[in-house]
Structure formats: C-alpha cells, structure tokens
Length: 398
Image (cartoon, rainbow, N blue to C red; front, side, top):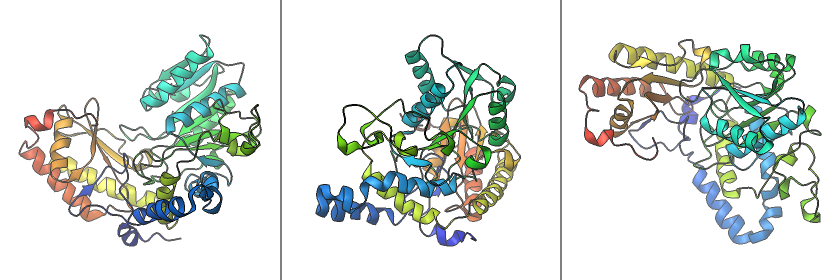
C-alpha cells in the first residue's frame, strides 16, 4: 500500500486558514464523521431503537473496531477491545498484570509518564495495601531500574511533553528477563508511528483514540492483551459486558473469552460510530509512510524555528527515530507565546512548566503548512506579540 497524502488531507475538515499542529491532543474532524454519526442517531437509534444492539451491530462494535486498530499497533487479531477511558484501561491492565505476578509488589514507571497513569497506579497500590508501591525514575534510567523486585513495567512509549520515545522491544525484553510484565501506554503512538506489540512480545497495552485517531473529544480507549494471557488475565473491573454470558444474568461473575473479558460498561455507540468514520481514512494508510513523512516534516519545522527563533529552546530528541510525531520547545513565557500563536491560527498547545508542543499528523499537514507556521512563529517572537495581558491569563485547559 502506498499512502496518498493529498487525498487523505482532503478527507479532513480543518478550518480554512488554520494550521493545526495539535492533533496529538485532539485530532480534527474527518469530513465523513458527521454523516456517520448522524446515521447512527437517526437511522439506527431513531428507527431501530433498542433493536439496534443486534440489527446495527452495536454490541459487536468494541471488538470489530478493536481489530481495525490492531493493524495500526502491530497487534494480533482478536487481542484489542474498545471501551471506557484510558485511565480505566490503565487500571485494568495494571491490576491484571499485578495479579499475574503475585510474589512482587513494585510498579516501575518514569517521571516523564503522563500523570494520570501514575495517579491510577498510586490509587491501585493504595487499594491493594501498603506492600504495593509505585517507583518512578528518570526516563533515561528505566532500563537500569528493572530488577527482580519489579512486578510490572508501566511505560508510555512517547513522552507527552518532549516526544522522547522509549525502545519498546528493548525494555520489554529486559522486563521479561527480570520476571516482570509490561503495560505500554500508546496514547502518543497509535496513529503516530508504527507499533509492534506482537513482535515486541508486549503483555498489555492501552491507548486513546481522540488524538491521532480522530474519534472526537471523549472518544473511547482501547486495551490490548497478548493472546498468551487471554485465559489468565482477570479484569479487576468485572463489568456486566465482560461476563462470559451477559444475558444469562448470572449472579456470579465469569470472565468472558479472550480480550472480551476486558469490556466493562455499555459501549459508547455514537463515539464508536465517529471512530469508524476516522478508521475508514486510516484503512488507506501505511504506517511506515506516515512515519517517514512525519520525521521529514518535523525536521523541516525544527530547522526553520531554530533559524528564526533562537529564544525558543528545542526540547525533543533531535534524531527523528528517537521521538514521536511532535516537536517541543521551551520558553519561560511558553503559555503566552502559544496563545499568541493560536490567535494567529497556528494551533499547538502548552504543557507546564514551559513547553510549547507542536504535533504533526501527515494525513492533513504538509510542507506548505510547516513553512507558514515557521513564518508566523518567527513574527510572534520577533515582535513580542505574545507580551499582552490577555495571552498571560491561564484558561482551564492549556
């Protein structure tokens, strides 16, 4: 498959004049989404009512869509299921992995991990008792910290702030050699770069779909369970739809077959319909093509910004193979600068304490966008356009 990027760009509804460099936080709207969701509302929910669970295939959506995402993350068929939020899926994966490694009590992660993952781990440790602990080390120290006390290695493959990329294959091999299991968070990987869960022998993985995969705000998360663990991984959140036979209405829980047991609550049918529309685009994509184009676009962006804006300090790995699909810069007034850029229709985002973050999705970003963004960033910095009170007042979402 050869990816036709101009054709893909035309399938997204990015507002005229906007250079959208924040698809790593919330992907833009695919043009087909409104019609697909409208169909789910008017033709399925509206006309079929409750019979839509069978007639429209609502109940099968989580695993059917999971298989489509599996292709993008190098997972086996039947090993990915959709539903709930990323935090819930982190909790499920961690709890299952800890139970599978009962003689150990340490979850190892890194200080660059997304805070929500760490919060879920801390909460799970509190629930399990004082013997369980979350240990965090600097990202570059993870490999050396894997020892025979670690039950689970929980790592986000791509650092949400800097884009620094962990070596999944190497760290998974080290964890397994030490007798630990792995949980990989793919929030900034799925749809951004090729992932090889099966080849790397990962145990569990989780991820969201509202970033690079364009399912819309609040879109559902996914969880991967390696097939070798399907019969042993038990969900801590034993929801009705993870039961072996939900409509038998047994009073006792029996886990479903395979990854189905990781289902918890009612599928978010409308959000899954939106995701289906986006995946129709992703079905046309070769992830190796996306990766190569992403690196080229970001390298062009970095060179241009550094040449124009010496006050912005590059904060991501310079080697494109060592970062995700984003470029980050530091500046003490990073928040105000980003607000000034957004006012000029270059949309990125800010991450505390001082990071301006720019995400690149080659499906709708091209060289012309990059060059225009560089020029606008240069103008904002050259003329101190960010130095206005309105740009320094923090909004609730940064």
